[in-house]
Image 1 (tube, rainbow, N blue to C red):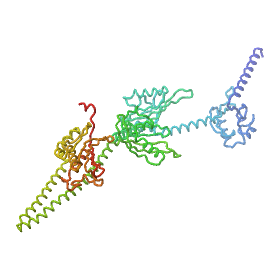
Image 2 (spheres, rainbow, N blue to C red):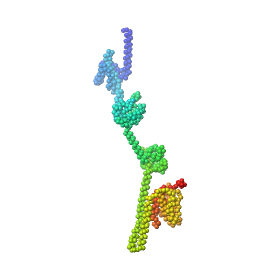
Image 3 (cartoon, rainbow, N blue to C red):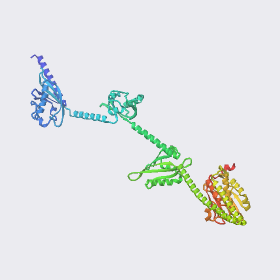
Amino acid sequence: MKPSSISKSKRAEKVLRENEANLIALVENTQDRIWAVDADYRLIVRNSQFLQGVREELKREIALGESVLLDSLPQAVRDEWRSYYDRALRGESFSVEKETQFYQGPACKDYRFHPIRSAEGKIRGVVVSGRDITERKRAEEALREAKEFSESLIASARDGISVLDNRGVHIDVNPALCEMTGFLREELIGVGPPHPYWPPELYEEIDRSFRKTRAGDFTDVELTFMRKNGERFPVIVNPAWIKDPQGNVISYFATVKDITERKRAEEAQRASEASLAEAQRIAHIGNWDRNIVTNELYWSNEIYRVFGLQPQEFGATYEAFLNSIHPDDREYVQKSVKEALHGDNPYRIDHRIVLPSGEVRIVHERGEVAFDESGEPIRMVGTVQDITERKRAEEEVHKKAKELEQKNAELERFTSAVSHDLRSPLVTIQTFQGHLERDIRSQDAARMEKDLGYIRNAADKMGRLLDDLRRFSRVGRIINPSEEAPLQAIAKEALDLAAGRITGRGVKVQVTEDPVVLYGDRTRLVEVFMNLVDNAIKFMGDQPAPRVEIGVEQAGEELVLHVRDNGIGIDPELQPLVFGLFHKLDPGSEGEGIGLALVRRIVEIHGGRIWVDSEGPGKGTTFRFTLAKTRRLRAEEEKR
């Protein structure tokens, strides 16, 4: 061999050795299990990974030069592997994924078979690489299960769900979204934006929300969508994005909730609250909620109207509420609240409040207390209702009922008096009528004249009684227009009417100079003073220095008028009888006993009351009475 030929041969051997070394290094450094068999299925090559995880009893049987179709394996397994090797020996390259029984524990391998060819192209054997794909299979199975679960979850969701790519085009939608919008799935997939369920007039608004989502703002947004039939409906959209492992946004996920019913409920609630507020306004009822622990109060708007305050003027604490209560009622209110908080009594009270203007109003409060598990009060809620007008109406009804009761009693007394006082002259007439008939038959002129005299006197008395009854009944029915007049002017008119009796008896009359003004039917008011003065003079007795005083006294906030005399006085036991109709303490006195009854009737019609004071016989008498709207003149009025 020539030297050059020897050199080439050595170089070729060197390259071959290097390639073989590289191949061995490559085979040893891979994670795959690699082996090769010849045409008789004998193991001719294997790497170090080949035996990793192989069952211990099989390791002893696997040796170079020995058949890989182990006798210890089931016949079906040996036949299966023989078919794989035969396919490769026929020149086929292929891969097989299968569970294998060679390894400890369950394992899934990806086996790849390749024929080994000589330089002449003859198949000499088979090389096999096996890769453990158990974890990958598990991951794929988990992914498949997760996908099935996700698809099932999306499909069964009651809310609409849409998946969009990063351009906003529908990738998937669930049945709920289709049912909600009325669009078929195929009408939505691959469409948008704009999407078919976006109302045209709201494109810009909805697209702006979509762009905010793409920018990373995933706040829930309330929008209006459109059904296929054109109907608009409100929705809440909750967006989110889906990223790939590198963090790139690949799609968007959004849930769509139809809130039509919620909106209707909210609208119904608003209408109900508006109706309640209007009902509270009409009924003048406000509600409050007190936190017992923090002592804070919540007030409804109507509370401010009840108390006559603006929200900024009203405190948010219980003490601020107490400041609006009438000072005389605060202790009572606090006591009632304390009893309610202890569970002793329900909170149901009426009390007064004072408005900023100084006006006093009456309110009714109702409250309920909530207790914790230990029985401690934690909250108290209630209502406040202005019942001023109702109270006034009740008082008016009570007043009218009392007046009716008094009128009925008066009518009863009136009937009794009329029956009694008219019966006496009537009996006299009937008696002497019989006497007259008898005396006419006997032609006794003197007795006839006497009989006629009794009859005339009885008829005259009956006439006077009827006149007095007519006067009494007309009081209250025939009323002149009310007017204001100074007490002195009214008294002067009365004294002028009684001047004859005053002069004849030599009575000294003194009238107060207090600047007091009376209000009412002037004619009737004069009649009151005239009758009282006339009554005082009538019962002076033998008083050597008869005196009558007309004056006024201050009794708290009330002005009390009086007519006082120094006459014979009245026994305390008889004082309740003096105002009786046709009642005369002295049967021999003049008149028919209607004067004081008439006075009381006039006083009561003018919104007042009258009573008599006397320490007894010989001690004089004072008639005191009040009249509504009696007042003192102001200084500037006196100057005028």
